[in-house]
Image 1 (cartoon, rainbow, N blue to C red):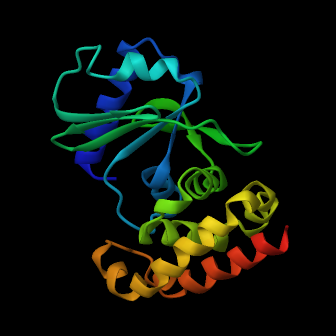
Image 2 (cartoon, helix red, strand yellow):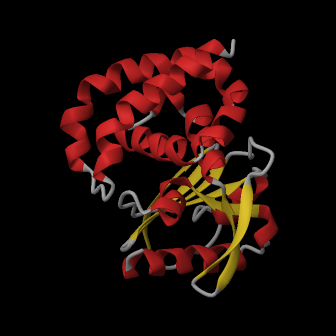
Length: 208
């Protein structure tokens, strides 16, 4: 992780602590958390997941003073803080898998970091209609390394199959062009991700 990312993560911790939200009530997930496991691509922002909508009220600059922010976006299910180092997203998205986090030390702080399969299932379940090329890469790297665990979660994604399939139909036409815009360290996964993702969609469909 870059120094800029480390500064952003520490700012997120301070905001959560100032809001009085204990570490048992949030988890670190998303693309940046996934890169900690596999170091497969660059990711710049911080995604913090919450399960209680009331916490968003403690994190919005609309109701609370938060230093260093340049701008922010607030919706019913997230608060996005835009800072010099990048963006911090506080997202309302309850966990979906059974073993959804592990405790890890990050910059001398012990926090709940979501498991790779929880990260991917969240991406596919909560925003199937807005998947991006980077999400295809992320899904593929987890399928490559945690195939069994991902197969155990297929039933969760069955209701989202049609949306996922339609979105993939659009993304695969753009894949070769747009994948070059990402900073990817695992070149092999960039090559094989479309096949891996497509095969997983077929497995989800077969789980109907």
